Image (cartoon, rainbow, N blue to C red):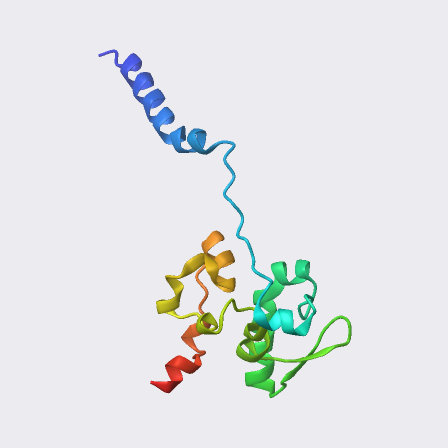
Length: 147
């Protein structure tokens, strides 16, 4: 009844199979998304500075949007003052997406436009991070409003 050799052999085979995906991908970095900051609106403005610094927006954009939502819906505030003292309208559609869109046709990201994927500003990073943006559960774009 000595099955120690088979047990150890089975465990080794299992361990090799379990770590194969990691070994296969070792040293291969996933390509980071290329963000298009050369949109028609940004070209028109002549400025590439967002409402806050790039580092701040990369780390805190969702918290900022949630703060905006609470301030607008619960407190009736509509103006955001950034760290440089500049003021902006607290609006995803009118402030953020005014600049952050590649073409007028893809300004509003819905389930239908999500299939366009990486050429859209929001989805390029959200797909890379495997995060589903849920903005459009509440917000509607003009094409949806026309229906």
